[in-house]
Image 1 (cartoon, rainbow, N blue to C red):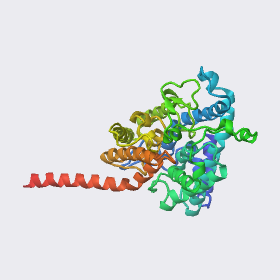
Image 2 (tube, rainbow, N blue to C red):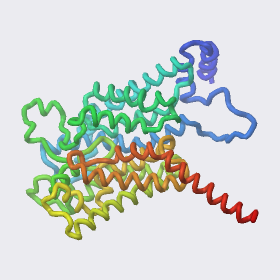
Image 3 (cartoon, helix red, strand yellow):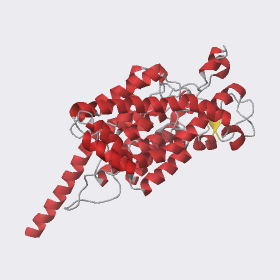
Image 4 (cartoon, one colour):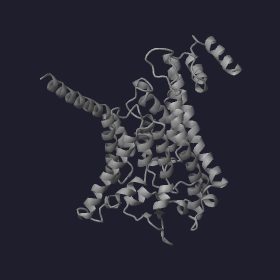
Length: 411
């Protein structure tokens, strides 16, 4: 209580000062604001925006921890070969993997938060308003959706661009029309495409300097399928150059961005967000449905013989529709990014349409862009732009229905 009283005294001291927004941000991080509503038609609950953001971060922490272990695992497996008798605690959850993963992943998290929150504080002080909490989630999402070996200066530039152009120019948290984390991802994709291709297995820089890069290069699942290779198999055969099984793809023991690999943990995070009523189950369910429908359409084209096996699109087109859901970033994007309440659709019917089109377009981009076979972030950004239009027509349709009912009653 003494600490809280002291902080309150400092808040009163700096109330009219220039740095008041920055101080208030720290003061309200753990404590409820002193000015709260006591009467009137207000919804009173124990949660607020900051604690809602923290709930999303909690759902992302398992993906972050798994990604740290997986970074070390992919590094040593690429050098020494994947173990034939894989043991979770012996080969994956060990100090060696965690140590290497931590020294590469945690700097991404630190840079993301330090740079992003610095920009937020600067804008709060300049504008004289409270520091907004929206970047708490964005700061965690960004390290999970970028390649692990991306230079930190490059990430810093992208974060500044994403916060300023993707959010602040629209008025800040709650006013942005694009998902800030995906705006950062898009900037990296178009500004530094060679770093975002994701066509190689990550190995620590120190090993590359040792002069053995040829022995440690490899492909991701999407990269292999885009080249018509049987890289995703039911059982990996001995002597097979590169192969990942369905179970490895589902549990996450595969190369990829830090947080996207484990579909099991992503589904657990989805269940947690739905249970806490943070994320819309309609968007998640319709997103997966849209991806499955697009996959079925491509499978039908292959089964009908309308495309030759020599075509560059054949590998991903012939991939069974359900496998599209366990490879790439579509599950992570649909669960943690498409459900953004600010940039997504607001109406219930609009959420069904919005989510379905995200999944549908994601697989379409994945198949028709073999040079970069992942399209979920582009699909979500596209639908962010069209979300207000979808809601507009849904509302207008409801208005017309009610007008017709009114005319019937008054006739």
